[in-house]
Image 1 (cartoon, rainbow, N blue to C red):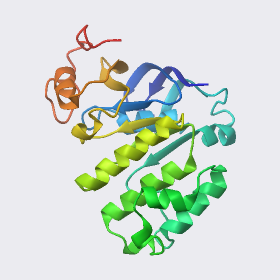
Image 2: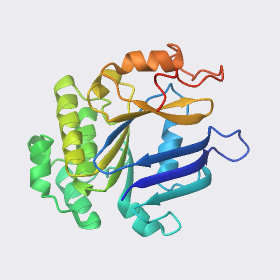
Image 3: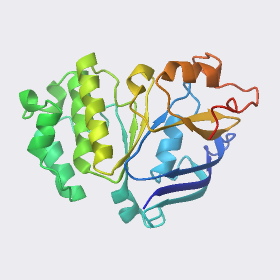
Length: 245
């Protein structure tokens, strides 16, 4: 039981690959962080892992014995959500989304309990279009939680949330791991990943490298990328030896 990524090359037609030879082994019940500068390929990697053929050039994916060659069962194991509210129907309510997720994924979770955990009760029956950006973000993360997928990939899930809501979201992500689900999180809010992740993925030399989690993700980011804010280092060096695993 694991999500296995082997020798993955990620990129787009007529463009140089973003990442090569990516190999990761993700066990159940873990939270993985993904930190890298803008434009490094975080979203493309997550979409490729989720079975999206557009950024996936070559390599193999296997989630609990299922591969993207059989997309329906694979997609029931691996869920990717871009947390920009694109997963939401603006005419429908939060209650509708939670029930739909429960029905489509055969979830074992009670939608009303999920609504309580994510503090949605005050706007549960309002259409998505009437909600603030932060409220929509709460609904999106709650939707992922309700799916109860074995492997969930969340792209910037903490954006637009105030500090209390970010704390609530992180608490519920840890609960997902306690239920033996694995969560893969990319975030530019590095402080919110402090103490959350079991492992961290960084990009070096055109591939993905797993390093130990740390209590200070900003310090890790600066060590790996030299403090750069927009592009990964191109000096060809891997992380310092004491970071590599």
